Amino acid sequence: MMRYNILERIVAWGKEQAQVRALVLEGSLAKQQSIDELSDLDINVWYEGEIPFGQTISWLADIGEVLIENRLQMETPAGMINTQLVIFGNGVKVDFSFWPVSLLEKAFPYYEKLEILLDKDSQAGQIKQCISEKKGARMEKAEFDRIVNEFWFELHYVAKFLKRGEIWFVQGIQAGIRENYLLPLLEESARLKGLKPSFSGRKIENWTDTTRLAAIFADYSLASNWQAMWEEIALFEEISNFIALQYHFALPQVKIERMKNLLRGIQEG
Image (cartoon, rainbow, N blue to C red; front, side, top):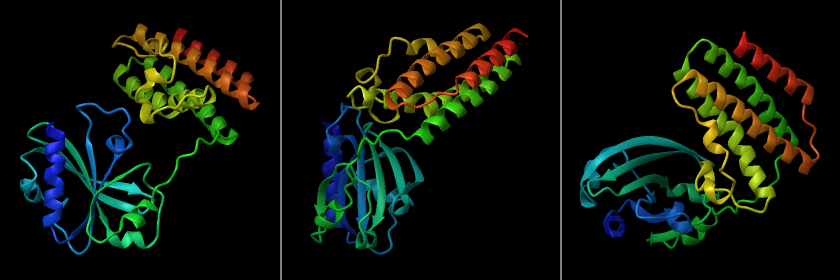
């Protein structure tokens, strides 16, 4: 498989680079979850000294032909880390991140699971101290209240800009509502039912009932966007009521009904 050919080349490259002290595989392949032929390689390059890696593409020549790459910074519990996301000519995508070994002087929570690919200085023990077991802590009431409040607040923008016919803008707002308010409640609902949600809604078909999700996605028409808003409201209310019942949280029902009346008034006015 092309991905494993690239992986072998990365390890061979690391062995030849004096600055590279360890290579670690993380992500879905390390966890052996939700992987297929399109899964990325997530490679941590632990290094010492000055490195050109992540700053040019010339260092990648020993690994493969670069089709396209992107350099970013990633926020981690250890601070900002440089990354270089690379798609090679054979279609394999590798997300490289560059970690100075000095960070290992104090363990920090980062990894869920990892695989040590290269360890020149017997640092595997220190690296593995950075594994942090994710615990399924219940949603706190303050967080639940914030999500409910902000969901209804954002819907005012949806209704207002739909009334103005600004569909492109509305669909951007709706994408944020789905990610920031609906998805966290879908995840919490799944946990309450004994299921294990994946990050960012991945494999959502495996951990929630998706029969109603299609209705909250609109096409590029006003009628469809209004309908999607009301379907989204119905779904959000169902899930928030379920969570509130399980945790004995109180929902601001008077405010919610007044908000629904306000949204109807904007639509019909």
